[in-house]
Length: 385
Image (cartoon, rainbow, N blue to C red; front, side, top):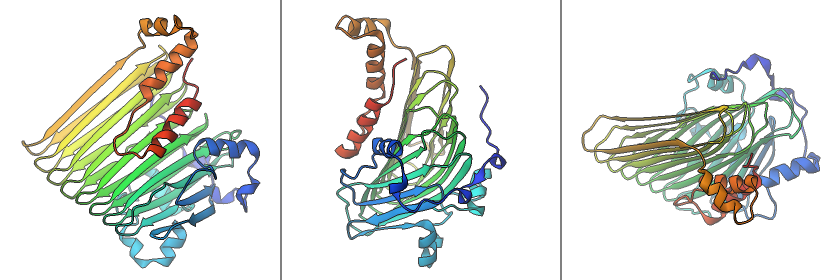
């Protein structure tokens, strides 16, 4: 299977889609779909942002010390946002960044004030409801000095639409001693193309923890966030949990630049391949002495009709660094299946249980509520044959 190209001309602007006025317009099936991804009124949230196609329908905060606005409003309200807009990601990076720069559909702006530590997560949702549109969003998140934010982004499409394209530009800025835990739980469609373009800048003593979960069928995804650790003792973790279904093309990467003393990173991926093509990339570049980086990729093949590629890369410009990588691709051991079947499980149930165990990663630094949401998504996904 060759790399999937996307022709932007095949998609209409999201601005041409019908404009809903309220979330109440969503039908029961849509509401249930979004609830599975964490958009649930019963869950405790510090703030929420929901965008359908090109229209922000919900934007509210529940606490002081937090600001949430549609990005179009924020750009009008604050002159200083220009210091962050298109600074971690270049608008000239590729055809997708250019498309967003030329025709922005909106997105969210989130800022946590200095030394303000949010107790509960902020929830955002970018939802495509109209067939054959390109949703083009730009998000900016600023975690000020000493602040902490847990951000959950749930992205999905209407259960019954066909082709759609999501382009998401996201820029994250973590100031001195700040911490951002960013969790993406996505449920795209079998004909959805997805092109996130992400840049992260972490200052001295700052922490960025990113978890990407994609367990449901999708047409193709290609993304490779670029993170710069520019302050000493800055750290970043990237974890991806992927189920690659037949006819899906998923190319997930991560690139971290260690630019300051004692900065460190880890890039970890777990990939289960039922079919299609899965590419797990990781790149760590040591641009300063006394830095550490680790790449880890594990793939589980459940079919001879799929392809799994692991592509680690380590670059260093200094001798006093510690960069490591490990990669493994294998299959489920038959004795494991037989062991579980001997205890009353069917073969399908046994395989599903093994797969869920393989994809379950206990992530250091992630709050229990977010870990619970990830575990719940694993339970809901059909991970057997």
